[in-house]
Length: 410
Figure 1 (cartoon, rainbow, N blue to C red):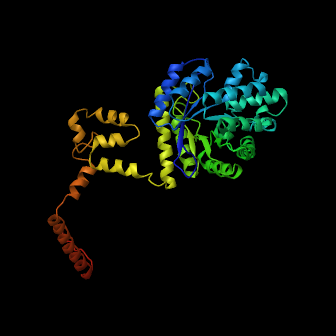
Figure 2 (figure 1 turned 120 degrees about the horizontal axis):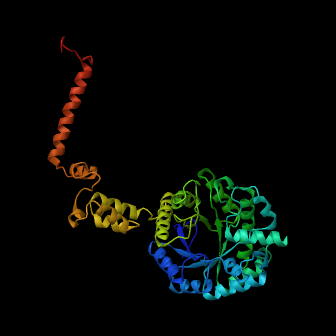
Figure 3 (figure 1 turned 90 degrees about the vertical axis):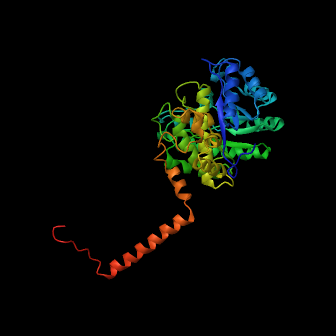
């Protein structure tokens, strides 16, 4: 798989258990389901029991690249006490996961001690789990993160196991009021510096991005990332363009995702309807994937990507010709399209009808247009002849003072 702003926009689906729920089987099912609906990569964000075993089964069953956030398992190894983390525990976790076959790691190396105070006045503070863990460690030890200070050693591990960096945005904004602030952009500048170090070690690298950003501020994120990070691929969570729609954040974020994809973002991390509310199930995974497939495709169209519009044109032609099965199957979600159609017209005969239940047989504009298009040459000639005569009458009217006289009492 290849990512980059000159290629088609890719999407990632997040799965993973928590301390409060899910099992290995459920997470593997979510992974398979997400790939079924179009995820290009999967991230295992497990923080509950059996992290190693869960990841093992996900990797064994995945045909797409798998990413992880190693700090989660490292924290589990020190019983959830962030202050007890150290380089040795983290290093061993990296090697353990690399030997399992993980393809890319989210590494929160940009969370530096000097940036943590910049988050104090935020409405939502630090919303990244990895970012908050490392911020707490930095404050507890009043020192730079061991991830930052040992970054070159991490590069050597990544190089040895051919693992890609996903440099994490640990200080991303968690609400639109916090967007594009000094903490977020300070971290981004550090990620740019770290990218150059990773490239020096010949390690592939992409950059994670926000987060919650209103539409008018999205372009600045893309431009700054390209400038600071040497045009390394950008990988964003959304961004969510408003904070008022819990339960619908797959939509609020897909709006921002389409926009930043148009501006040059290479990969989009999906958001499900459960964002901010709970652990997503299989249905939520599908909703998130479909929303982001739409966003990515809209971005490809806006970028003028070669061939992006072929599927749109094929579906439009099927729609106009009332080839219902082709219309369903060319869509991103054939099951839902077929279900909605069949709710009101369930019989098989309806699959060849030249109307749907919205307009019925007499008011379908496409059916009427088809009838217009099927007129023979004689009918068209008759219409044209009538128009010629009407044009003559128009000229005659203008030549005769253009007045209309009404009889008295008319």
